[in-house]
Amino acid sequence: MVFPQVIAAFHAIYDVIGLPGNLLVIATIILETRFHVMRYILLASLALSDFLLLVLVNLFRIESIAQEHWLYGQTMCYLNTSFTRYFYINTVLHLVTVSYDRYLAIVKSPLTYNSIITNTRVVFLALIWIIPVIPVSILGWGKYVYKPEVFSCEQERAVQSESIRAKEVVFPVATLLVPLLIIVFLKTSVYKTARRQINAMEVQVGGPVDAESPQQQEIVSRRLRDRKVAVDVSIIIAAFLVCFLPVWVTGICHLFVPGINISAEAVLSTTCVYFLSAICNPIIYSIRKREFRKAVKKMFRRIGVGSYSNDNDIV
Image 1 (cartoon, rainbow, N blue to C red):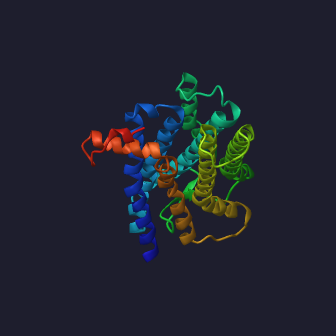
Image 2 (cartoon, rainbow, N blue to C red):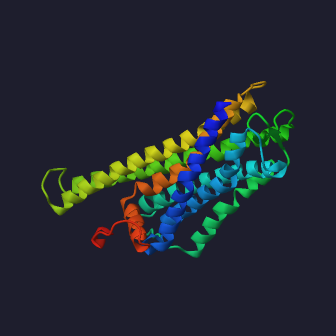
Image 3 (cartoon, one colour):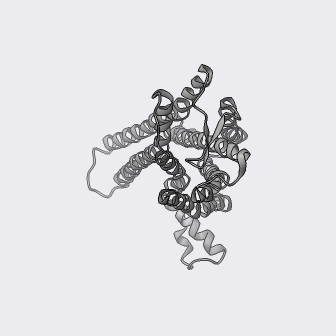
């Protein structure tokens, strides 16, 4: 069949882009000391999660889909499925935490917030990696069966007790719907607060006019940042939905539509879209940030790669 080869090619592209891309994010944040603050540490942690997803899950699926047969044994098939769920939850927790960090900085505690790495924040970051083990364990090991039509293991849904069905219902709600609502609330609060601050400054200086006073320049600058926040919010939520919603919908259909037969092509396609998240997050959280791009160029110059330019561009 041609279709599995196309899907395998997309999975391979994800690794070609995502593996060096996420490593570049991690290396840049580690080497650039001014990025040793909470929001960038969260970015590095998210990049590590995406990198491990590509290595422990996606890498095994590329050749298996291309060969149209799982090549790594039953145990690895079970582990591959469990790792998929683990890194899915891990990514969701990172997205919520990044949103909450910005909420604290702009809305909740704008006067007292600082991004210094403290012991409490280190523990909180560790919990992001520990918590996903709990739902994966609750859902159980050994409840998967090999599906030759999709060349991997899936949750067995043919015969399930009520307790298993209840767990399966809770999983998509707790890991997509609730986090999405939280992210929307946090980002909306950030946007509204930014707007209120701009309106207050306009009232203070007598309204938006075209003079070049420092106060009015600050208003223009705040407006531009406000617009960027709005764009970032839209991109983050859209990417979150595009990557995770298709898999979520197919899972819900399995649960609530008796006798539904979702084609192998649909399962392979939605899973492929899910893995797109491993290359989307570095783009959204790092490439859009000018200071991060400058730091990447600076790092390349340190190791003798790329052209040399005036270091005054590095701010």
